[in-house]
Length: 113
Image (cartoon, rainbow, N blue to C red; front, side, top):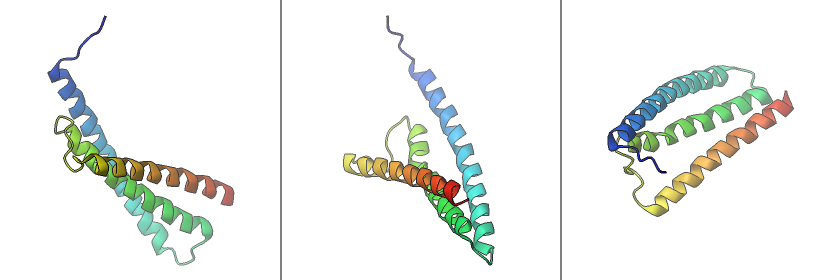
């Protein structure tokens, strides 16, 4: 027995998810920018400080990469920026790459501490 969701409930869920992503985007971007300013202004940069700068930069890239996802959620899941399948595939690879680099750098930071 399949239960089909009505169009209205799917749209409501997309708006809720999109709104939550906007909130996470704002908090993540502002926190990462403030951390980047703090660690960049430090005169003596140790290895962990340099790793923090790199991790924060990668996290800012990840925050920016969520913009097309948020835009498509508010556009009934129609792709806005990446309507071409090649660009969509490249975007997916780039997001996965950013996430893997972030995890790797956090692991390296835990070893260097």
